[in-house]
Length: 321
Image (tube, rainbow, N blue to C red):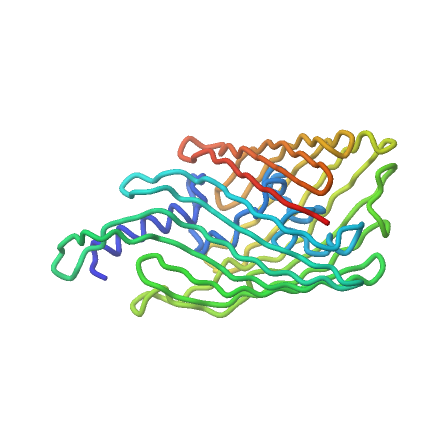
């Protein structure tokens, strides 16, 4: 890849790494796919992935599947990230996952895809090729969760493929532990969930033969959610979480997630949240959720609090049996 092409792709990588809504970033991280909230509900709660989840548990809180009546869950989602000047196409995030609970055990599988921006490569003679190339990241993910009374834990691993002008692969791993105040989710009274995670741990990888080796965006964090229900008709949930990204070292930062939800008759949910990253990324979110006989539909609007960022829409659908 020549200098002009490298500069072009570096610009695209910096924009996508900042999640298209950052301003005055100290440094960018590769593989932004591994940082995005992976469900519309999580995104609406300010990205708090330490709350309970009934859709896309593998990417939010896998241990949720071990509590309640659900034994099988499948979900899929799409987030629109919009167009980028100088490129064709639009950047979108897609994911799908499933989970199966067997007694005290749960097993998960899923995949994620982030891409859609296209560019015309430049050859060594500085001629623009007519065939467009697509920038993309994708993962194939597996997970396992175990319940031990009020305590539960999980582990997961991901095979990552990335193509930002040249292709590369790597592996990342994560694990977490949770504690709940009760065995079954309560529809009346007060209960809570607390958890801690470490994720995206893996070896250095190279985007190309001439590039420097980098780490995936590894982090450790903790958070939870407090819920209060009134006779099954109303439920208010408030949650918070903190993630510390320690790799790569030059892009270390702390991310704070704040969010709340009001659920009416176990059917209609109204959500709001705020996310703040000390590296510059921040924004408000608002969402709506519908639940009916195991079917879940969620929509979230994310509004960056900077003039540079772009708003986006998250849509998630799920089925629990």
